[in-house]
Image (cartoon, rainbow, N blue to C red; front, side):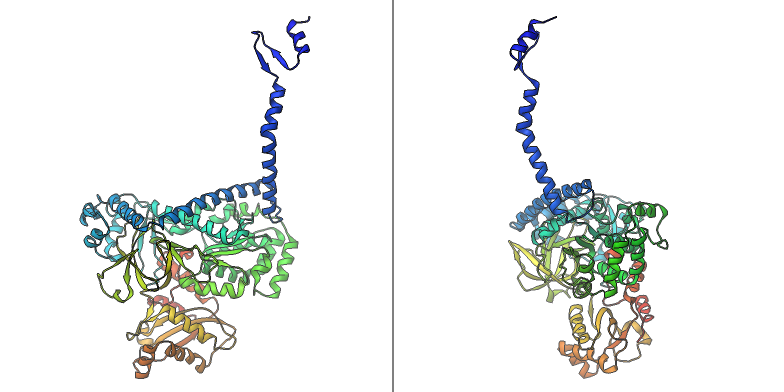
Length: 629
């Protein structure tokens, strides 16, 4: 039966009449118009997205979903890092206001604590009154407050419950437990954003969607009486970042709590990927020890890659092993390719097994300089190393905005700390007059004084820094040494940096020798075993290229030290200081020393700074047992 409405539709198919006589556009026509307006640009954007992902993938065989996830995270991080860099730039243009605001925030937040009432925080209105009302401090000033906080007492030193208790590495001879708050941790997150921006700017190839081999491992966490986690602030900070899809090691690999097993697993998955783009660790020492492990274990690693397994002898839990092996497949072709490279030798091995490697991201300043130098000269020839931050257990201090420069310079972060500076010639005084951030001068040396977010006020860190310039209004600094790290048996005060450079020059005079590691001891620590009535230095070196040294070669170090230090030469000529004694230790001794120190101190290897001058008898006894010549 024909309807009048149907007939009208047929006569005018572009219109549809409903029963109320209202007219609407034909649905298919609307969809076509919408598809034309919105669909074509959307399709075009999707095509551009796919092309960009393909261009950045560097020929990887990963799934498109994995690449897309990596791409989106990378793009998001890139945008966020740009905003964080802008924020840092803005803060360096008005450091007086930023520093005043940072100080007032710290004081106001904790003014009702027991400590805040004792030191009259309510009367502190600016930096001058802060300096007048609060003394300069060292760790013993806070020890009781921190102990009470760790036991669960509230509102003692800070108004909030600390999220972590962290131990210092003890390079100055003493160890400290410090509080860490969420604000301290957030400062690190902000810094990593700035680092990411600088990295992409100077090394544009890091924008590629390549895996990063991250040499981290889960710290051995304990808890205080009140349940506050005790461990390293840096590894805990990275935990959330490791959930991203940018790392070559599966998530299960970061559950491994022991260093040798964790490094082995990281190496295994890194070696499987020929297109690896970056190596990453907190410190250059970790990267160096990873390559040393590779040099010792390469045959087993190749066998694991060939068979698609994790070494059955590796001490990891069954659950972690199952998760890891689910990501492994036999790859005899890659195993043969790696074997050919390893049989040639390990000089420049990084770029040979990973031809697309763009960067090593790791701190190589301070006590890690020797490891960074060996990476550059041997394992990682031709691969740039970016030392991103200057940080400590006390918190973030500075960031390196100049990745491509050979010298490691760091811009102080005016939001993370309130800074003061003690001129180096006043460091021996207990309460010297300090300078503020806007009062320091270029090319001058200062002891760093900080007020952080975790309950340290006008705290003398013991770090000596040099002002090397300014970025906008903010100082750019270079770390020089720690006050406790100098050799001083007669008042000669040989700085760690001075001794290190002298030792490098001496080793260059030993034909074929390469310095791998070293430490020093003042003879007083030996007691009756020093074998001489004259105070002197005992030096322990791990070298390669020579098996023994003649007495004349060993004496070269003393001669070079006299040439580099007039005061030392004067004491030597007077006979009040005896000659330096040099001892060669067995290969791997300093890695064992590091493990021994961290086990005794209760800190993590991943935050460890090698003790170049040993101050404890048990550490000296350990390295003495490793002497072979």
